[in-house]
Image (tube, rainbow over all chains, first blue to last red; front, side, top):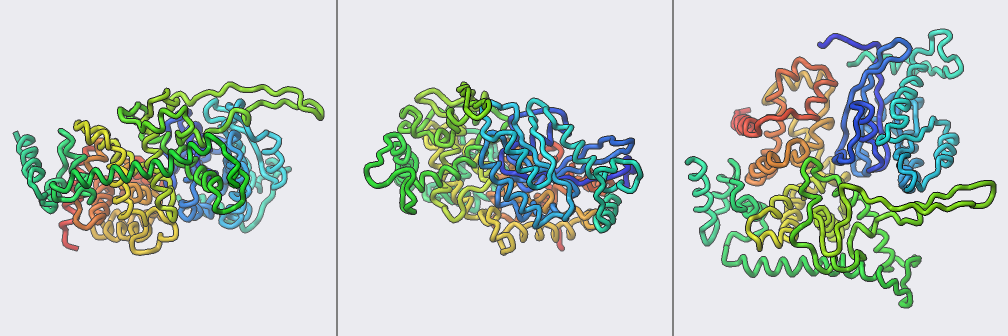
Length: 203
Length: 389
């Protein structure tokens, strides 16, 4: 076995309609690069990146999923193990925004109850083609009590921040016992706590 | 010399009045020479498109090409012109809720088209072929001021993109934006058509003709290599009809693998789950250590082999290698059993790394298969297929 080079392991999942830029977001985050020439994701893809938060080395294991309906049986099986889910829509594509509700339902059905969620309105560099206003994104996120951000994988806007914020939110939960650490956000469910710490040691 | 001898072997088989398909399969299994369109011709035979009796070819091809032209007329050209004149006097109009409304169909089709459009624009991005213009565009479509072009049906309109700035209650400013074309897939000028547009049409017609299945992501990766092989044929007549011939070959191939693409058939005998579990059983037989390691890591076949099998490995290797692998897969007497051996061979070849790797590094390795001579993989697959279990 390789020597453990990290303190915590977080499993994240990217979901959302086909073509909203999930793979590009992940690629920007993991390889700090952008390309418009991505093949479509079939089934699931997988990337790793280690970040440092509050002096802890956190290994992010990120699953990138295919957007089309056909792949849902394959992809929903990953929801259960995920500690954080990023739900992506495209600000130039109305339909992908409307489907956010559908994706949220999917999360409710298949994911752990207190999985950390985040909504991302991607392609925010394309303001000339925007059809979904930032306010609408904020509103739906507020209604569901979820974090929200507009991002651009192309212009590298908020990509690192999105992953860091999500990781931090999970860290708050798992390390919520430590006094003084973001007390305002601690929301610990005992059951989840034991679940997550167990899955941390899996790999 | 050996290569020339191989060419001759192929020509001997292909020159017969009635082609011996069994012989052709046993030859093609070891790879079809790229020269002089032999691959395209052999694939037409191996995919049961061309009849083995060559005397039937002229009439057969004429009929197929006629039929294909009819498909285009009925499903692409006519609906396209309808949109152009916008006649609402016949009781059918864009807002009609009548299920028989042609407008309803038109809008439903556009949903399918939208998905196809996204995918064909990201087909084989490592080569520029699909962005190049074809020598043989569909004339009715490219000389129609764009109204019949499929991708224009799903282009988002300029008005929708206007920037509206609000101040207080009223709209104060509407900034009309200038539409920017996607650099890589800029629309061709009147009279020209890119290869990706041709592929888009093939997939659209397939989805229209197979409404129960429609279009599923990944089908673009199946038609891509076939169309590429056909559109690069040195024979001008074959090249001219690459679209039609690849459509029918694709349809034939899909009839054998379509279950992989249908969610409700996942658990059936020819569904993707069955294929993956067969692969796992084979792996257990071929290399117990790796199988145990995967068990221990809980590294499930869905994580890597779902894509391998569904796409017949077309996303795992560069195009020339995919063509070579498909020569063998198409020559498999019991399609697609050999694919399972190829998948196992890919794993067994990496066994040293896999046995020492942890979950993430192993999965990364399997999802990004390292570049290697595909001949090594295929030989290993043959070896595994001959082992007694």
